[in-house]
Image 1 (cartoon, rainbow, N blue to C red):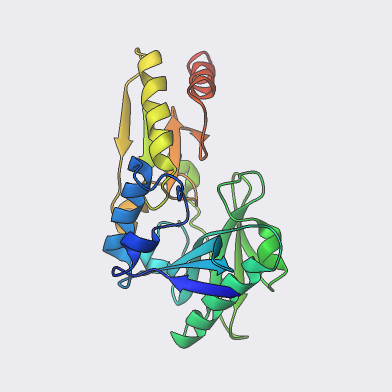
Image 2: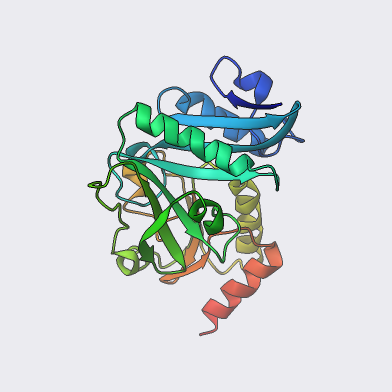
Length: 253
């Protein structure tokens, strides 16, 4: 039997988040749970799906102005992450739940950022089959999809100052938000790469709110980005060696 389990402060310790479920005591998992503990019931909805007691996936969503996605989507619910095991329409069940919550709260619709070239972003096809449409695009292959609940709902949209955002970063800098547990492993590799290239200075920015993040993030993703010399290095996990090579290529130009 398929069941939806909504996380709350009361059941977070028992249920935990979906990611790093096999390593509940890891620093990455603990950081994610600490972040959730502060946000659950105030802003964030985090729902897991089980089938005959086996965990099959999750969805994380919130009203746009509480989230780390770089998008203007007031009166929309924004999906941060959707991850499911293949088959059995688990994704559709979770999206439908988000839709019901959006209707209950009087929202104009649901929005989600996708990027077909990056596995950290939700898959476009999952949403297209549920009725989402592309309403905006941004550099780097980002697309903003929306499912409108009303015919007169406006189109959410991306900022347009991406180049200006990048131009603020002259040194190696990592932007991260612990909304995603995988950024901890990224930060470790980032530190190691910076040490290997000891002639380069590095920094880590940890914006703790959407207002703090908006002037900083060079991509719509918001949760993670490595930048250097006015250039985006990566928005996904890289090995230490891969990161070192990319940085060497930047400094050799």
